[in-house]
Image (cartoon, rainbow, N blue to C red; front, side, top):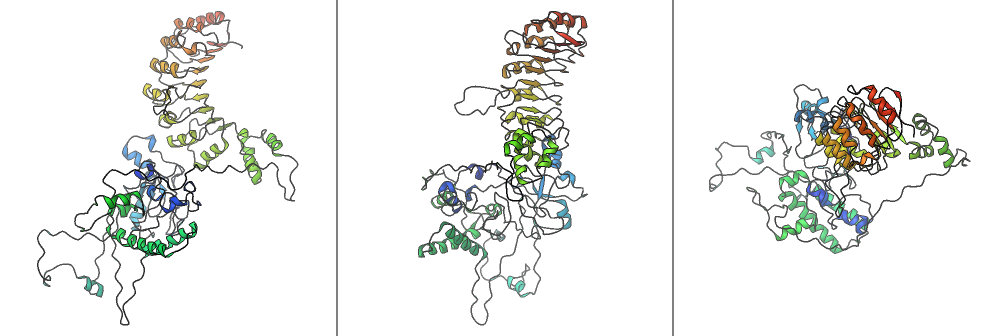
Length: 631
């Protein structure tokens, strides 16, 4: 990322990522453009590090690490339902000052921003609008569009597209009647002639800036060079042609192709055709989006043989997307193979000292010392040297990470959790969002314990689409507004199974301990729980208002898989339980702990009789209505 210094309060340009939904993102590489030929999987050197010209995203989105400049929090649009509230809590990036803020954090009075409808989370902030600043002040034109990497620069390795579009002149006004013969009379009132404006007789009329979804800025066409008295003026090469020539030369240097006469003629013809026909005949939508079909691409070949769209009033053909069916793809000329990233460098086994020698203790001995330290001491050790910093990231030193009671989770926190790969993660009573939780779960495949008590269901709903192969403990206590339909979404197997997969396994098949205290569970949810979580040994249903005697009958029925697996059962605070359900617990032979405290309709005498006769031996009661059995 490069920092912008165009004015006071200018922010840093963020690297946008692909939307993965537009037509360009879902297509495959063409294998024919210069960027594809440079890729390693097509046999190139892999130096440009650019995506295919036909795969440049048309609506790049902000990365998940983007936060508000004012409050330092991520986007919270998933926590509300109203459109205005969602807009106030979503992140918006200004196209002028590059600052990313929540619209609700700006208190600018009546000043309103101008939203860009083409790129998500993009606008002209109210501050720049109130100050009268435009994209021309920041050195960016409307035709410039950032590529997938989103970086700024004029070199070939930058994120901007190499071929900029020249601003299109406004279309000529339509005439309803036939054109009159002869030159127009001078006494007819109308706009001043072009020669008079060039001579300076009348000041040019100011161009109005059109604000809206497209945000176009009309510019004057470049004036042709005037002929001098010494001779005809030599036309200077256009910046379009200069960039294309510079691009050709760099491609030849990278690919080590000799500059022959045929390549020079091809370069001239390509530059002429790209510099004139594309800039003059390109459609306005393509000029604004910065999309151009590459030379030799499938889109250009289809246009040659098919129809060409004509804009009304322009009088010339336009390059457009092919209207007919797409032809079969060309067979690759180069051998395609899978390119895997290089392996990470191995950890150093010894600690280098300042004198040049190595410390006598190896890495294994240092890790045994580090295992006796807490998180705070480990963070202090990571600041000692680079070697200790790499050693302290070992996942054996971080079996459990506690981020509970945090108001918000910042991107450095999330990155630190992923680097340490803990087996147990506590996010209870935090402001984690759905996007952040999905990002974490997709990168913590070895996570065994996850605590999400007190979080909102909008965030916890990320569990419905995240793979949890190693999860053994899930804590969902005291989550508000949880209904049967939402629990069904969490318990049922994913609808998008892999091709050929016939086994319907739920997401909680391997979970051994489930905590659902304080939720509005009904018997329908318990039936789904018995079907899709058959390996539960510990179940917490305390303070569930709808749990009663029929629920206990479902848990201990002969067809219930939990009848033989339940070891710990917590039913404290379930006021619908009566003395009639106590004999049903004798069906569970492995039951070692039964918590019935704060159940109003249960009598202490009935609990004492169950403790004396319980399955298959007696219980002890350290507290009233708490039954324990020594294993």
